[in-house]
Length: 462
Image (cartoon, rainbow, N blue to C red; front, side, top):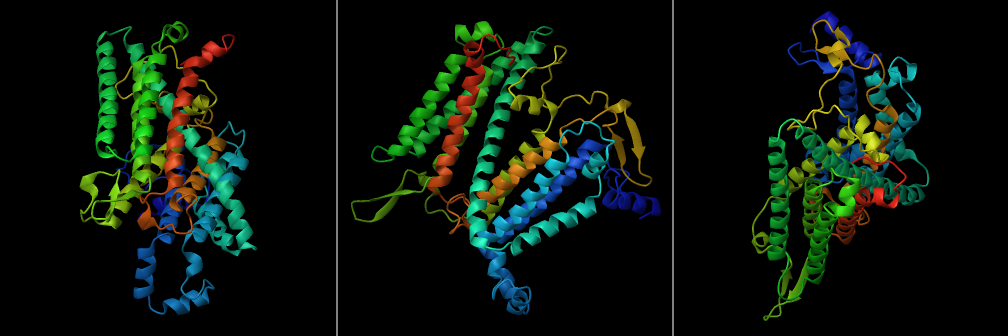
């Protein structure tokens, strides 16, 4: 490694320089992107630690393979078998440190509009120092006095933050649906083929939603029993029909001509996904058969009696879940998403329709100052004229995501028996949280449709 490269990485870790890789063959990266990438790495690191702390398998393997395990546990005052470093209470403490870290940065970065201020330099640099601070805060949480009171109070804070993070995800989903429809509709003024794409997308979405409803009716219900499943499938299927009819109703079309079936198709697919996820998270129902033996009902028959590696299933499922969380955190910090959270869905009049409408053009990125670390990756300082995303809102979303991860890993209100290996076992709290999220999503979308009718003097653009 060359001396200039080492100097550049030292400036990144302990100074205000933007982070980059030492490999010059890596593609160029924007300063705003590298900053968010580094915070995401911190988030992933602490999340992995939380998952390890909730793993019975890891705890057993460490006890069996680490020499002098009990002596080490006593030496660090973590109990005879390090019981203070595993379980839901340990996850609560570590999550408290991570949430406090992001909340402090949220307060520090409020109303930053210029990347040249000293607070902006702290946000965009000093990565090694910030890593030490994060580690100290997570470790220091284990020394909070009166642990019982702290854990009880922090549980309610975590639940409130987790629910708020779910709400933000749902608002951004509605924003995604409106953005998709408006972008493709803008293309119809120049090329009529976009009408075909709109029709095809709508057909695919409704086919998926109807197919999912039929499959769930086949595999999650039976002629006797499964009352919950039948009611929920009927209610959620009816809600999908309701939002579709409202979206194309004359009164809504008169105020919002861009409203259509594409948006309601997106919401219907998400409703079906949450319905499936809820039914999969519901504790199994059992009845006595003719031989007076307990049998499990209301679950797919092909899932019974098949051998499976629970650790593999849990690992893949957990990875997918936290990738979705990370995606929500990073995509919710753009200017457009921030405006969507305030109820503003307007798009520029000069918008160009694109098949991949999520990827906005770079705009003026190429006109910004280029700084190349000698021997390393090229960094584009794209915030020379001002910040391209809200620093404070970015940290606030990660603060809420920390609480959501804490509650999800510890099974929300069934924390005492929670283990990462039982991540996909059914609990009523997870079932109702997912089902409530489904209904809130429908209400949010309906509000974007009827709000112009309820408040005719206010300007809405969806």
